[in-house]
Length: 132
Image (tube, rainbow, N blue to C red):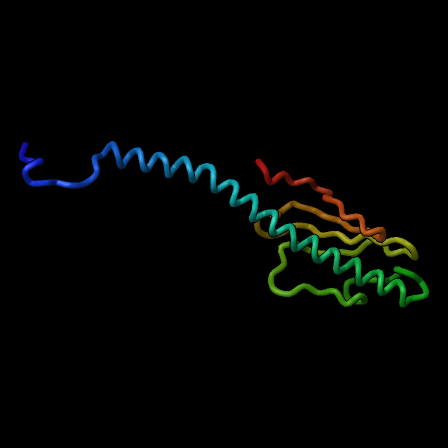
């Protein structure tokens, strides 16, 4: 009866515990989804850079009489800026074929691997499942 007279206002411990439980449930759902979206956005770096390497390799092959032979990152003018999450290599530089590879080395994409070849086939070699 004294509480009603004084007009005490506030939350009970039960109400606060319910709010904390709801926030915890929402965080348990939102955080994994956020991490998946973050990893997929980091994969975009590899896809964009491999596309640039493809374009540079095709231009190099068109300028040379020996096709892709001897083409490296320096010869095609490819360089990354900032801190790349992937390392890039070019292998199999023959007259008509090449293979450019991106290996994940930093962030959420460690162990992820993508390749692109002379036919512009982009392949997720190491199928990293970011949905788990």
